[in-house]
Image (cartoon, rainbow, N blue to C red; front, side, top):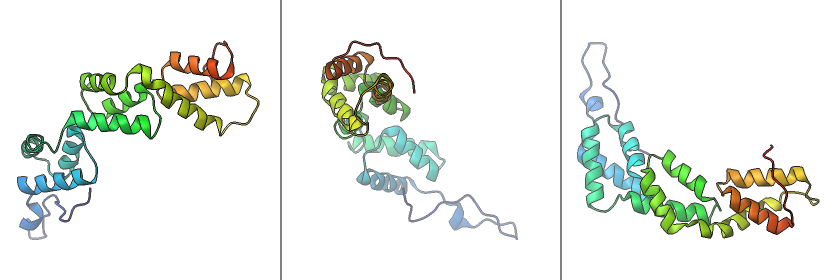
Length: 186
């Protein structure tokens, strides 16, 4: 986030006085405008926006007022953020449910909210299409005869993308007509 005006810690001159221009932290209205500007570029979770504003101003009470004001005006909604995030990761990056859930929890979102929205928008039954897309994409990078080592690497790659073990095994068995046990190896 780019700031037009940088807020700095008080600087002390050689005479011992502080510069009043450098010491004035942003007002609540300036923080609100800064938050709105950040939200125009991309959606943010409440936690992300709070962290950004904390970097500009250390006053957490003012920041909490700004966050509440944004929520009241419906500019900031964690549920909408989770929905957009899930749709983006599922459709554009072909990621599995576990990886999406882990990324959202890492962003500081409530795990129960994440799980609830994930179950509504991206049920486990819908994981096959993104799994097939990820499988096709990875197969383009592998050379032709598929031996056990390449199959294990492919299996591990799909697990790292967040797909469930059962879904990966079923898809690989369907694709390669095999009932082997996939050993995790790198």
